[in-house]
Amino acid sequence: PRELCPHCGASPLRWVRPSGQGTVYSTTTIARKAEAGGDYNVALIDLDEDVRMMSRIEGIAPERVQIGMRVTAQTIQHNGKGLVVFHPAVNAPGEVA
Image 1: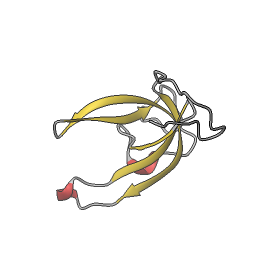
Image 2 (image 1 turned 90 degrees about the vertical axis):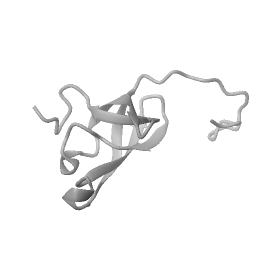
Image 3 (image 1 turned 45 degrees about the vertical axis):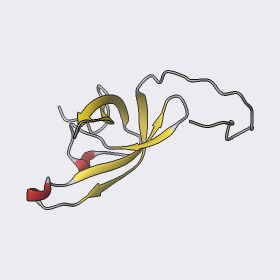
Image 4 (image 1 turned 30 degrees about the vertical axis):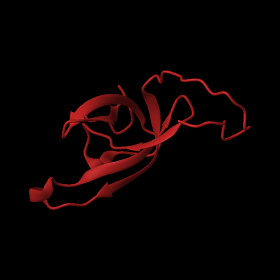
């Protein structure tokens, strides 16, 4: 949350419910040994509401995540905490069929 608009300095701001849709802006694969959980992806996602967030893309091999790929958000529980992750959108480039 912010107190002022980062672009124009306007206030007050309002809460907006996100659509859950976005586009991969940047991606990297973090290499781990299989016994430590294996490789995973870290990505910056540009939400359709003009917000960028860091998360990961699930449901696809980390090396198959592509910049420009359309993704859909999902909230999951991980170690007792809520976490937002993304999955390739239907018919997204690089989607596992």
